[in-house]
Length: 131
Image 1: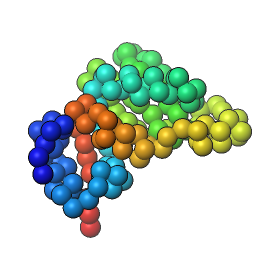
Image 2 (image 1 turned 180 degrees about the horizontal axis):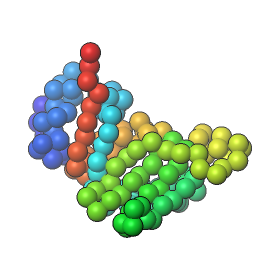
Image 3 (image 1 turned 135 degrees about the vertical axis):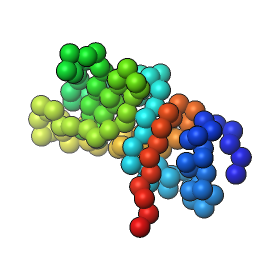
């Protein structure tokens, strides 16, 4: 397999998996993903433009951060980079919760979209260990 999109060290992590599996299957094995600030901003833009945000936070422990949550996932940006993490319900009503959950992408869908559209924006990736 030839690397044309991934950073070299990211490609070394995923190349064995991609030899025998599809990109979609890879997205289902991701346990965590760190992306560039630019990619984190694109994902936050998607959240805000589709009115999927359930909660936002801009300071944590006195430090400037940018956390944007949806029901299905969140984007947490620190000075060191952005992480795609679990979402939170926030203070949404039951109906809003259901609507946002159905309308928004899941965390796995976001992983897949980044792997497919922005592979060079991945700074770090961790896969579940097969047992």
